[in-house]
Length: 251
Image (cartoon, rainbow, N blue to C red; front, top):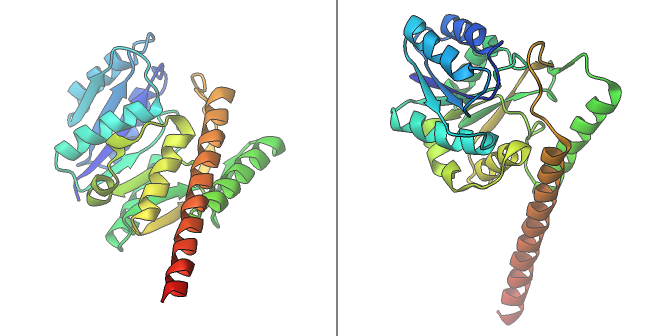
């Protein structure tokens, strides 16, 4: 299977070369797409140097910092245009271990349309997180799955593999959310399409180098959007049920 790995970057100069080197070891025939938001620290330049050294790497240089969702939308579009079979998404800060990718691809081969690297299935977890952060993340994912009616335990994980046909079917280019909300929106679309989503365990580790891009604003946006989507979903279910009841009474 021809596999593309899409890597959004912003100020990841301390991580990008090491990650690309490891990815080349894990996926010798893989295609790696770096989507750089004009990083002031020269991440894009380093990625270009790696492209010359390792080959089969493309760097998309964007004019400014436009957000995670925007980066993935553009990266997915380019990867799909290259005619790949599978698209992998992951962080560049080593919170996602590239050595898990073969297990994700094996799940695709076994019949999954999308595979989520999950912290909340047996064998998964988080490394060195304080209790309040673990509780917040786990509660947030339980709430998201429950209100949206999806059978995925880690809706906000960005470490994923998508069959190209599945990604095309959910049209990520038509989404508008950023951050966690973008990742959740893709899970919802996969689920509503009836596509097969599986989860493989990962151990999530905090970055050792660079600065986290997570903020309270991103978390708040995600939870507000999830709640809105959940209300709309429940209203839609209620309307269908009411329409069914009225139809039976008329019959």
